[in-house]
Image (cartoon, rainbow, N blue to C red; front, side):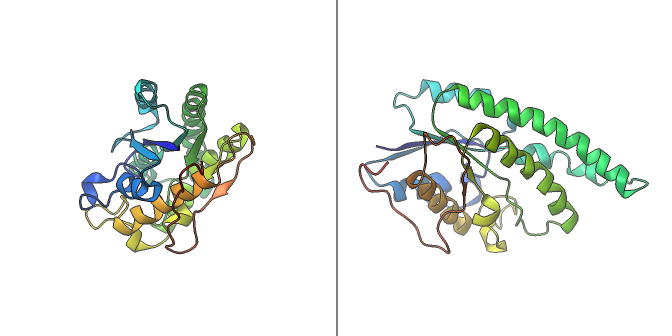
Length: 227
């Protein structure tokens, strides 16, 4: 039996932005079927510093998870967007500012990931998607610096990565209620990718695999006993 616990922010906890029954965890449960289980511990608005509280909730689960999947860090970057509008005297000065923020993000992300791995459950992490409608080329470029940290830290620890940049590349993947949240279609794609990740999870491999889920909108289903 697979039991997937979803941790992090509103990428997984998108209940407030789509009709009831179409959110990520609901669609994932439908793909898992009755023999498997999905538990939502992610909370809208969470940042990296909130992860210890969610990990404490993992430890209180009566049915221990077989997989933890974390999507966190986007709100930490979002908090920097205002500062990114500040004028600078040169491109190099802008790069120096980004380097400072990237270093702080690295420290916080590394700390979060080590706390996750200390729980001793198989874990995977997600990148921050960059297909958000209205995202400027400059902000998309800046976001890549933080996604680089996620992939690098995952590689250091041998943790699989779900690359949400590949899962949700289109404007239709984002909610009309709030353009930074997954829409029904985005939730469908994320749920499908999560199920695909679990089907192909190498718990003992100690290597980082980049997952993008199934091509297009095909939705894999887990069979009883397959994970």
